[in-house]
Image 1 (tube, rainbow, N blue to C red):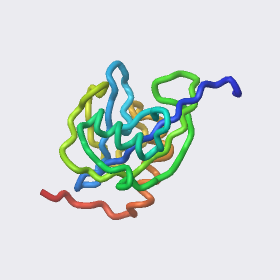
Image 2: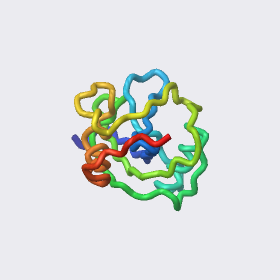
Image 3: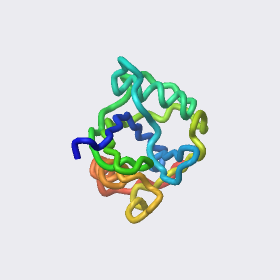
Image 4: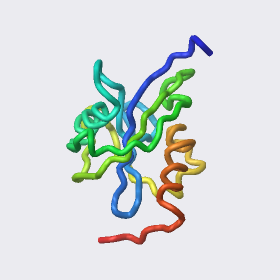
Length: 145
């Protein structure tokens, strides 16, 4: 286990008015996950999140606007036998996102539909969705137009 490669990332949770979570699928992969990525030298997790949000989705947010949801570790979605350590933030949705950089596809996930989906990253299913559901409570928001 000590020789197991580790990837450290920041991941972002952006929710729309209906409480759906924004997911991305990177080019050449099959798994959906939250936007985010690896830090550049000297970056804090929130600085990484703000930079990645702009690069991947064209959205601007200040690092101070991100709210820590949690830090978890588990299997990486797209790298076999690799441990992922992710700092996950709640992030305001400041505009309509569009796929950029390595992002191939965007999708919106109803949090209650995450269980059993084979195309969702383990971190998302095992930690992020349960935390978001617990944070939001049992009420389901009705669509707002």
